[in-house]
Image (cartoon, rainbow, N blue to C red; front, side, top):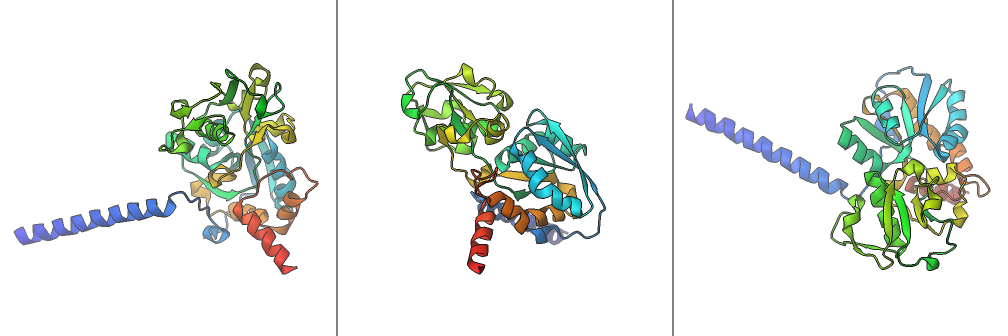
Length: 304
């Protein structure tokens, strides 16, 4: 009896060690690297006929991008689409989780990851798309050189975009953040150097443009800047996007094997989508490209 008990205990601890190794390896593999799925990950095990798609969107260019560069191909495949508009960043994710829409396209990966963990939502990113950067705008200054002590600055108030805006201000040499922190989670108290004594005020992201006159400078996400007709070329500063800040198309995790997901991924990888996005005279000329698009364009040029 004692021998059997020892055997069971040995097996139990071996299982515990194996699980710990799995967790550690998974954490090390994903550290600092955004790995989004590829088409082959979503080969459907059965054809699920969802032909009437409901797409959750917010104000901004990604609604237009879907309508111009993705929807025509979906229509050719026999799909119909209804756009469901939301005024804030939270509602489209709750709507997706509650099966009120089938896909949303408005948020970057960092926001999605924070939001779904905080709210226990089973949502998954399926594809990065070209993205307009967060930028510093002003109706009072024409250059960052004009910034004086006591300048007021508005930034988004949600967790991920607030941290992102602080990183933008740091990149523009207006503040410095504590070097030992995870800057993707930075908060106002992480500012260690503020040479201009910036008075930084968090504001709901969808109100940043309408409150632009109330502040000397505003750090505004690209979708709200474009939807409110701000001239991107007149931004005082534009960020260089890191992988976590590219906009992603998002579905319910339970739908990853469905045919419409694979079809949307195929369309985004298509030559037609690429031609629309890379048109130097088009609406997306100032958008930054995710790595896969750089690779696709480079491959196309080499094959000519």
